[in-house]
Length: 335
Image (cartoon, rainbow, N blue to C red; front, side):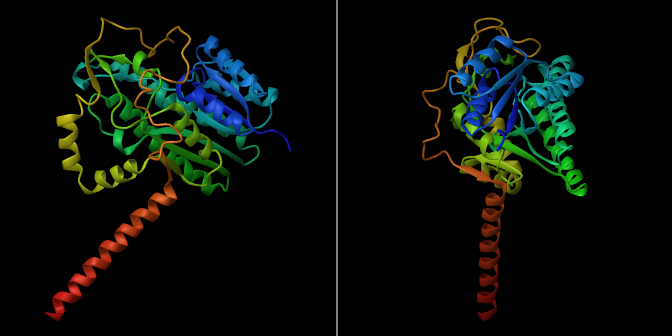
């Protein structure tokens, strides 16, 4: 059986680099896409030590034609692409009143349009065979609507809507191409150091933080699942329910605690280089500076919840609620 081919954008560091390792262990040959060729080569060298065949392409995900060309190069060099994971992203953190339109546009180009460009490139080659898996990253429900994160939330919400519409089109056309969203909580990657930060203080993760290997495992599972999405941790499933049942309470909670939960007590030491427009130089790996409190794959709190399992859970809760209400009505009628 021929080896399957996976493509990962943003593969030079962070989640993308961890996902390359995970998919390589799962038996894929891996094409590594990103802006920093030096970090991509470091990832390729790491995979080569485990006899994983790689192909490195330095490309900006915001260039739609370059992404189309990259997909064709990969197919010509490695073989038919079966999995494409869009892991590249960039954002700016700060109050909306402090943001400028140019930075918001750039964050949208990288995170939203970069993922769209990758999805279109993958579709172009996968539709020749009518099968494959395209994986996009989303924010876990616990991270949605956070203050200071309007640029990121806007990009991810747009991507979510894009993928929802695409699924219906693929079903209409009877294509067996799966679109899977991976809902990620805070992940301990270097991006906290190189995100454009307008708060004046150092950034820190909001809520439980997980190591990149956990996000990589979720992406690897998404490559094989038939579910629409995969999330990490039970808290995210209950947060989705809270968003529906008590939006006002959650909004008040985020307004009062959302700021300090994302910023350390230390002031930043002047303007820091960021990766919004150009890659930050340096030998960055997958992990960031919060490993002391980050949950790993072997943590009992690290669980992977598919959309099907989450729907079953919500259905069971709804059935219990209806049953309790009917029993209450019966008791009232008897009295």
